Image (cartoon, rainbow, N blue to C red; front, side):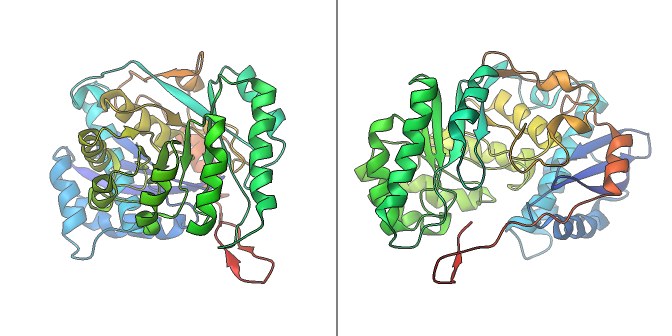
Length: 382
């Protein structure tokens, strides 16, 4: 079997799909996307395809190393996202060729289902009580919300009060049993992160995500020392080398690599294994499409430290299309009592509706992150 072509499909709301075709008619699917840079990642996939066309698709580890190391310059969001989608598609193809789900090719599952969480509110947290009620009614046992709007280095304590008010509103609406994760989204600088974490301490949060940006990870030492709230981080890290110092610091409790950004199945599994050595939990990042979620579930099946899974059904970004639109059997993602069973079909365990993918790719997208500004006119972290 030889690789014949790599085709990318830019589809709404903000996703990029990849199909690897072979001369024997088998194909594999991946999702190589970096939100807001989908066109750039598609170009990177096209460049990497020069090496793969005509090759046997089965030596995935070797292909990964060539595509990572062979270009001399390596790493970063665009390169690793392109490599991620290719790696995913190669694993999907391998599973289909052997008639086995990917998780069985990785040693077999350690679990048959994974707990999910759902998003409430939008980029600027609002209408949280209604969202929390909906989440609970759908059977979810955990939710995640953006904690705050933009914050200056030193900002008003009224904004901290609003964060606390949002948490209290959710707790009063759905009680104390629902898990709540608060995403700071890198919007908070170190001086404000300290009082924010201290103020959130009494509310029994599941975790706080990106209390500071990854590039300020040295600040986590002080933040971790003053609060018992578990700290999660990692969606903007792209390789095991990026995670190395984070894990060695001992200040992060949950890592969140994204298998569509962090080198695919091959690399993300290695990152998860590194984290297990430090007794750190895994909560894969996935506000993306159905292929990305299927990839995450295959990894959740084999990574012992996997604890909870993000998914994008109904997320505020999905305005024109949603998670289930691009697959033929939506029941594969049907959750029950807050848990989702690991797909057991060949490859990634989903069947992509290629006809609909092609149709929607004619529409495409140019999704961009919003640009926020502080009151003084300076650009704010989104």
